[in-house]
Image (cartoon, rainbow, N blue to C red; front, side):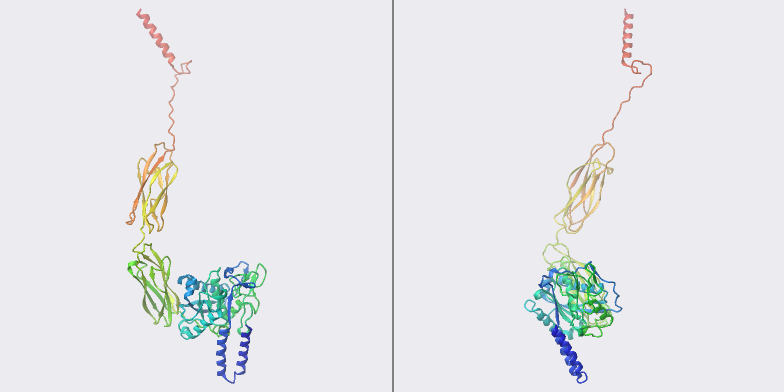
Length: 569
């Protein structure tokens, strides 16, 4: 770093000495100086602990509760910067696929913007395009400096074509391997950097913001020299700011500033003039240092203005394997710049590699308005499979606005799994007041919905003797069973045990409903008590408890028989 600062001071002296003598020589010296600084002044982020290199997974990108970010004054103007991404085949493998690689890029850009918005810096990072890298690079054998310098040479050579086409301020190469356990590498005050996707508590999203900081002239923890008018990151307590070089402390979403406080330790998370990244960016935006070509932002390119709108349309959102092709009609109008472009992409949701064939395609919108058809090949295989889904949309627009949201498409297999059949069975006895379950099972498949109806056939029971939770029900896609509650009504009527039969039916042409459940409802009410009333009293029988009893009748009978016998004699 000392050599580089010294070189820059020498350059300043040279330009002063020869300013009036030879303007042409000065321009050549500036050109040579610019190239040497870009080649030599490289800064990399290394995840390291005190005294050595540590595993990348030791870091994280969480927001710490102990960091107090003040209510900053917002910028009165704003700056937009576009990033042109390139990726290698090894980067796709490292990320786990094309979809995952684009997820990484998008999350990294969102993270870079989060740092700015949380600290009220009006800088927006955008994706100009994501392109396959066709340059030379050997990620497995070259040193990190060689990888960056190789990419810089490629970008410098291609910039005469790429700059007018994409209007990007930064060129970022996503690779699948960086030596020495490094997450990224960048030209200090330049426009090229390399980053790598990896697993590690949020650092994979943090690295882009960090390396773009180096491209903007920021360093880790020491001043980069007065000619770069730069500053560095900070560490306060157990927290690291964006540009800090790494280590064991966790990383929080803040920019170094004397105004940021670690509430746990009371430490200031910055130092005036030396660790004030927030102030550095605020001043750069407020005083137009990007557009005025300040040496720290000398590679700023004003992004292409987005004019007009590009949309797409589809014949359907559902396709059969036998359809063969899905046609995406892309239309645009009102586009002022004929170098404008957009990417048509697809993203798997549940599809596998063999279900359809499509490589994300960048379309050049070379006229004010137009249409073009992009085809996605649907593969008619012999696999028995369920309905599968993928997404189609437009993204990474450059010089145009996107007017259509992504669409979820389905591919219906000619060899689909069956829907399956539904059935119920069993014998159930319920005491009045009890609740039982009607278990509907689905066998032989689980594709799609099956709608069915519960039918109750009364035997000795009536409708008032029971309640069914639902009579109409649906088994959803993938659902193999459903429980329906059946309750025996608890009345107060003494009655015999009652019975009924439960059936199910469906009008689905691909499914059969079968089986039945016999239900007995057991009465829980006791039979009524019947009491025979006693003989009423005549009030004249004083020895019989007030009633005309059998003894009186017997006495009268004896008297009658005696009298009869006496007369006969």
